[in-house]
Image 1 (tube, one colour):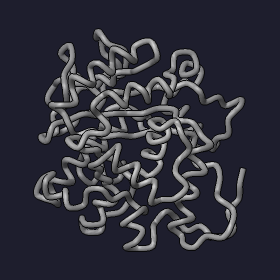
Image 2 (cartoon, rainbow, N blue to C red):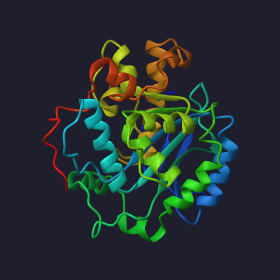
Image 3 (cartoon, rainbow, N blue to C red):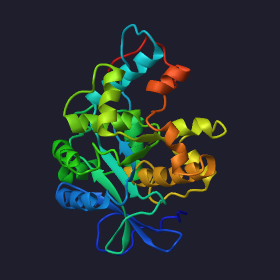
Image 4 (tube, rainbow, N blue to C red):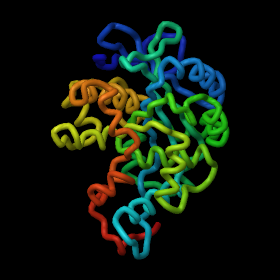
Length: 305
């Protein structure tokens, strides 16, 4: 499906940014807060059976710490870094885009829908964060004061997500981009626990809650060895963005349409990409293949906050 440029906020019944698709249809990023969480999750429960492809993106306060010590491998180091940061930091925003196998979006009140969940709990005056990450999120339009006033309690969200039909469901296919940290935060929300000590235990949890996962960054290895981030990929595939970069709803929509185009161009459709399902870029089976690709960081000279 082609995506047209955003045209700002348009009149409509719902809250959230609107854009116009190339088809002329209105798309709304449905903003979810504490006061409409229950009703929006009811909508999602109705949507997920017919739209079982779920593209996901999260926003969080960056990466602020590196583990200290001796590590057997770069793979162990990078998982310890992921755990250290996810355990310490707080989820700020989650975007979910639901489609069917043809890339069609659900409709509500005559509008195509994408969901953006805004969480409370992160306070710049009290919590650690990466300055550059927070600056990017602020420039993208995230209002941290509003999040604290109206934002969703992550524990309540985790309870509703558990019964939504979106997780623990083998019929759902999760679409992501370089998503180790994204899934780390979701597993933390779902379990209300720190992440497991080992990467193997992490993948046991991941496979239980998210049985079918596609990581586009991993898929790109099989597409003429493509490189770059999500925005670069979208440019190469001629997928245009609706909404601001570094907001989770817009990023999840771009992830969804980029996956569909990539699958059609290089894998003869989504089913052709299934053989690469279940692998996260730079982790697990991918790290076994190539020693991990999380960045050039020394194994014994990490620094803590």
